[in-house]
Amino acid sequence: MAARGRWWARVSASQQHSSLSSKCPYPYDSCYSFFPTPALPSSILRTTHYSLSPPRRRLPQLPALDSDAPHPRQHRGSVNLKKKSKSFEQWDSLTAKFSGVSNIPFMLIQMPQITLNARNLMAANKTALLAVPWLGMLTGLLGNLSLLSYFVNKREKEAIVVQALGVVSIYIVCSQLAIGEAMPLPQFVVTSVVVASGLVLNFLKYFGMLNTQIWHFWEDFVTVGGVSVVPQVMWSTFVPYVPDSILPGAVSSIIALAAVIMARTGKLPPKGVKFVGSISGWTATLLFMWMPVSQMWTNLLNPDNIKGLSAFSKLFGMIGNGLMMPRALFIRDLMWFTGATWAALFYGYGNILCMYCFNTVNREFFWAATVGLISWLG
Image (cartoon, rainbow, N blue to C red; front, side, top):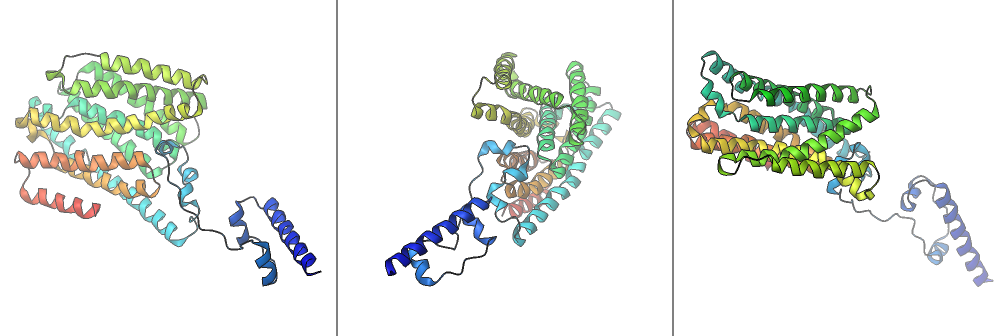
């Protein structure tokens, strides 16, 4: 009788567990917080070998390619389990505020440079505008435009505003360079068409007024354009020391076009399609990261023209990108974090260091920027 009683208790507990598992839409170990625990004697609990306390879960890492997921709050599987916690809500709010405050320095980032360029144009000092490499500005402009599409997909409002401000402000600088004949006119005309089209399409996409096929075409265009421009810009930066050629851009363009066509026609495996979809975001980050490299290379080649740079523009760039780093860390967006960190260290502080080495900024300005950056990173 005793053996039969233990056997019946074991079967009853097993059936009760199966019933709970079939009704629960969540993983097994999370269901006990929604259903009452059956009041079973301790002897039965010992014989059933079931534990009613759920095991602890380790937070999974977000793969790098998932940085390009269109809805970040859906791919944050590592933090969804704690989404209702007070700590999560506080960090979510705080990092969003940091990202929002970054709009202020980004709104001002190009104003000192625009003002300085305007003064040089009014004084007919077109040589000073050569201190601002049009290729580097174009790189940053295309990077901002591509990242604008990336963040429109992710619905990160603060980052969308930042990228839109970056596109508009850098385009104004490019316009000044074109007026001062520091940027070739054909390249400026093509840039104007791309910028206008990109801003309109992103605006329509964000407010849900754009056809899906048109948006996919724009994404493919950004992907092919980004893959084509990145190696061409890198090659052209060193043109005095390497042959002038469009071969890097042409080869990259053919490869990117073939990859996009194969992805759209289903000729690639799921991982391949996912990789092609992430290319546009990463090429945008590379374009944005190459902007300070181009600027510092120009500084080394023409140190006499470095006075045409605005130290406050670089300082605002360092502050703005630094403020966006916590948000990128919080949502585990590797691409966003890489671009923001690189821009803060090289576009902002790197150029300030160059200007300090060539005695165009005073010691107090340089050390204030140094101490501020190190403190923020710490």
